[in-house]
Image (cartoon, rainbow, N blue to C red; front, side, top):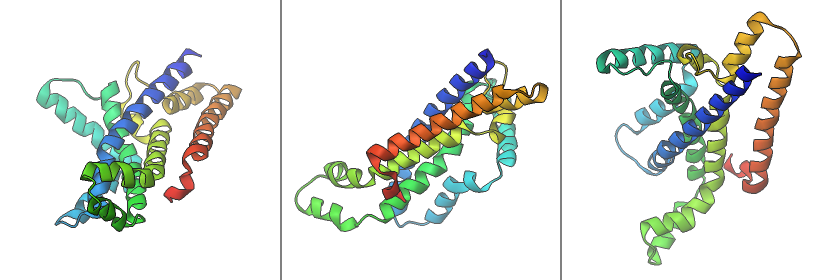
Length: 212
């Protein structure tokens, strides 16, 4: 059905954008939080992890009101657009990347990087050759869980979807309001199969168990 296809494509695009944004922000943030000691560190960590704590309905309503205020101030429509949804889904995805990458860094012996620096490696080379290979499972796990959290989100998307911009979970809920038939079971099965295949393939090549 066209609505399920369009919803799937929108959810897929949102998942990719949210994952890329969460990686761009989450990797440096995790490096700073895991290795740095500075005033306000706990406050920043709590802020980055807040989307995991705040109920989805509350966060969705708050974000919707914030985007409306941005529209009133700038005159540019943000709510009920793809990019408004992308902002919300990036906030959903960010805590997963920060938490999993931070966990990988905490379990990493800092003396390994110090040894590389002592042997003459530059900081970026030490990160690329020593730190990155060791935390890569955590980065991949963070990206994967960020994508899944975005792909299956319902609560925040309820407030931000608009005409022509509807995610797959919203399409499923709307369809259930008027019809009860095996179509939903088939769509849910495909959704679960895609997520399961991603988990299995990623674990096969990156050993996600090492990230936990």
